[in-house]
Image (cartoon, rainbow, N blue to C red):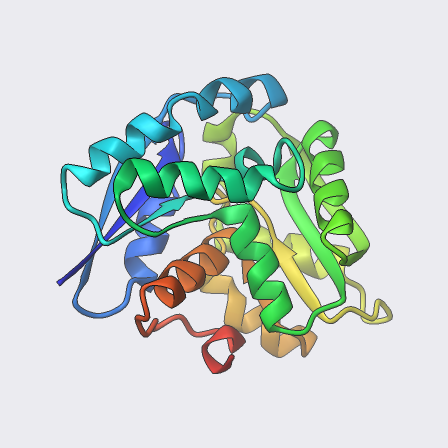
Length: 232
């Protein structure tokens, strides 16, 4: 039995059920939390102080790998911070670690995506950080649409249908992109991914799908996730 550890913001209500739904067979999901209520730069900065302690607590459960499941929390300070975060958590947990922002970059690279569309639930402050991060990673962000939400509980109330509708509105038929990325581990997305891929004709990934794919890849596990990443 493989034990998968996930470090999430305390107000996140979506990552656990989605990770459990995507988890490979013969694996279990174990969660540790960091304090966060509002998804702001200051809130994410304060939350990060608890990341290593959360990973240490997951080590008590002898997890085989750890995911830092927070998108903006792992890209907040730009390139290099994501890798540093993975190294710190890996050391604290005594196991391989991935961070969502870097998992997204790896997933988009695996899909050979160059031009992407991004949708988020965030306010402009974090959308700007995310656009800058993805652009510096070498992706052309053709469009980035946010919902303007700050309270993480409000983000957690969004449904997969909300994600589908936002993507369909933000990615018109005449917009040429290689992939679509739905950001935020508290945004319910997984049930809508295959439907969106069929409708748009391009791969659609989310923060949670990319993170689970990356963690499973790091541990050499097969995922049951029904997206084009399975074929990579």
